[in-house]
Length: 447
Image (cartoon, rainbow, N blue to C red; front, side):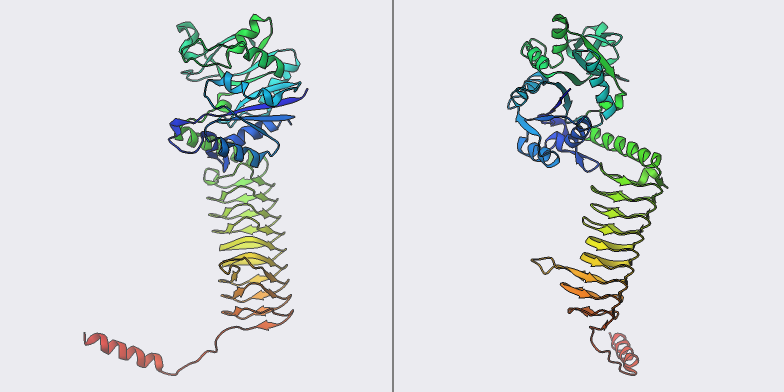
């Protein structure tokens, strides 16, 4: 059965106290909206429709950055969740299949949970609602059900005391045949305490039309919504705990897991060792057997098998490290290919460069890649030896097996196997330091 996602992302999120649309606040370096899309895309949907409102241009840009094929529609008036879903109707005109309604501020619905909802649909349920047992039901809508047979949903503000005692609550996530969903929404009114068109009203209408409604349940943590900065912090903590557990279950060693912070798309292979206080930005892949030492920061990079990174290393976007490369303390690598067995062990910047296999880059080396307007490339051949505190002024090439003397400024290419020295000649004046100290001491004593 074809599937369409309808992702509601129109809310302003006033309790966030922010100019940024709520769904664009980030958890693990990705907007909340993207987390919701990732969950839905596990179903391989045929269509994705995002309903935007406040900050619609920014929401649309973020959505298309993640999924260029997504359709973004606008809810210009905030008239309730039912009204929001109706905005997707034109975009799904002619679509024959199931529609699943998700929320851009609910980032943790698992793929298995959504599949269970589709399975309930395939088993004959006309409408499927995702519910959860709430520790504190509070303002959640209550699911009035007999087993998994759903009778109706009651919003807390409209509920009777008996209905408020129900602990089975509505997540808002709903699945139904798309045509059926929109036909029911056409019948929804706004005669309620808020004067809004509730999506939840479709359940009562479905039951009145002799359609079946079922409840699928999940742990409450999956349904966590983000409405405040405190919620955002809690969501980050939830994500990190889940990701750390996943990494260790898949064979990585985290020596102090509570200090390691992942991005939403971090990948660690088996037998990777991650020491304390390592932080991952987006776009990091670390292959099996690599070691990431303490206080390192990685973003947009690929670390091959057996590499050793850090401590206190920074890998920036475009860093590609081949097998067995070593990046040591206070080394920064950006947009550079570091080939097998190369060593960049300390106090060095390598940017817009290629470092050959087994090359050794001495402490304090800098690839001077930027002239204030353009970036330029440095090439270092295999088995080259770059002396400490060498300034490589790009564009420049140091050949295979070549060497540079410590403290050199290299502005011209160095041939394979050559030694390049680019520094001023040393001048030594015998006894000068002794005489200078005596002179300065005498001058100080006269003051």
